[in-house]
Image (cartoon, rainbow, N blue to C red):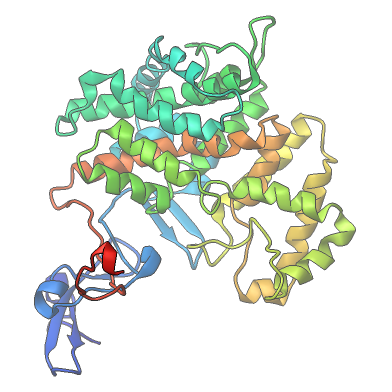
Length: 442
């Protein structure tokens, strides 16, 4: 494959690569498409029409499935940006509602826009009262993610007035409803699992405060939200709000490409997130730390992780995209210290174990050479455990945060005139055509 450019070398429409079929000697030209930043992509939409061949890319690791203006990741440099703003700046200087507005609308809101957006979300946090009866159909020991998949999908049975995906106003109303109601549903799922009454949302609290209140308040006594915990919760939501074309986001886009309503599309995303390789990593980190047990055993387990014949793996290290330190992990580490200090558990054994494990791994040539740096899941599980969230709720919290990213990506896809029904192709390796044999002769 060779690259050719126009005489000036600047016109994107004249920059292309040439694919040579060495069987026939034919050459085929494919345009190069530049983004605003990051690598260019080869436009292979005409590949099958020109050559009669498909590409083969399991896991889509080298395939750009869409054009997007929402999130940019530079895995080599450890950069994550939403609409051009670095995640570190957003986590430090912004709040989740502002980030939601940014993801949905493309720009940070001014004061009036922010107040109006916050008011809109606040006034959508209640769910239809009949929805509470739906929970009674689940067993008490049902996993909260199972409940989330079902209840979020069922919202389409309650809000018929905003299901037309071709209506811009209805798309925005549904976006607001999902951002507002998913935390309420998540808290209801938790309350149901522990046998406590549902706690209604309160309009005088911020988004993060309201979620913590719905999670941990009980009617018998007043619950005061700790501002440090509310800030940490807000940061956790920001850090997980969107992450480009990951498995769950791609699932939302694929489901949405069929014209499925947004509630069904987001439910599909929640199902995808449920997998331990995607949304359950922070829970796996805690399980790993429990398995290691104490600081003096870390070296032993580090060696086990380096042994290709040993099944043990260091959870919370490395990332499919990042080949540098996950920028979200640095912010999460800071929040972890703040939360443990506020709760008076600065000597938390798991934190000491995690910090020593991180230190040893980052000093080990094996992990450094393979660029296995701590990711956002490494510390988030410790924070959530300290805040009394059960491990079964960790992935639910991920879904609460990621809802705005999913709905922003869905909305962008619906509004893209070039978007098509998702239909991956395959390399068929099954039997070729053969005659049917009646059962009496088999």
